[in-house]
Length: 140
Image (cartoon, rainbow, N blue to C red; front, top):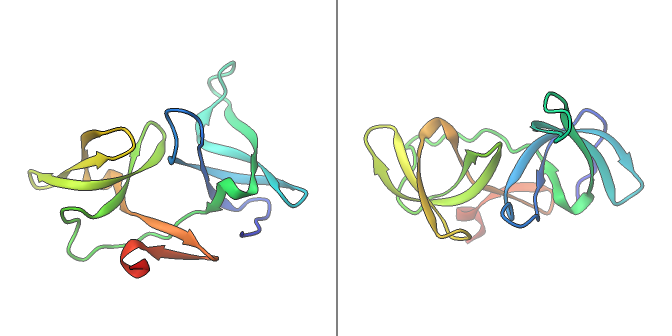
């Protein structure tokens, strides 16, 4: 488990129904003891004041550093695991096919749905394992 300080850019994993496995950009406001952090989301807002960023306390196990940018020299290929930016967060899926010159269909196993995305809304998927970023190819 990583330790974060005020101002660190992080991602928070959602465990809510309909959002399981998605990650949301946030900034750490402060640490609460050893097991939770107060964060302010970059793209999520409060329900009662739609212009105010959502602030909440999250379990330390649901937080990870902001992933590094990974440039793929050859672009994305069929069956590559990617994160797609949708509904204000990053969702893990798999490239199922290419559409035109700059769109990719992404299949989401959890929801059994395939959605096309422009390449600028995709990133290579990385997992935070034992304090470092690891691609699926490195884990095999």
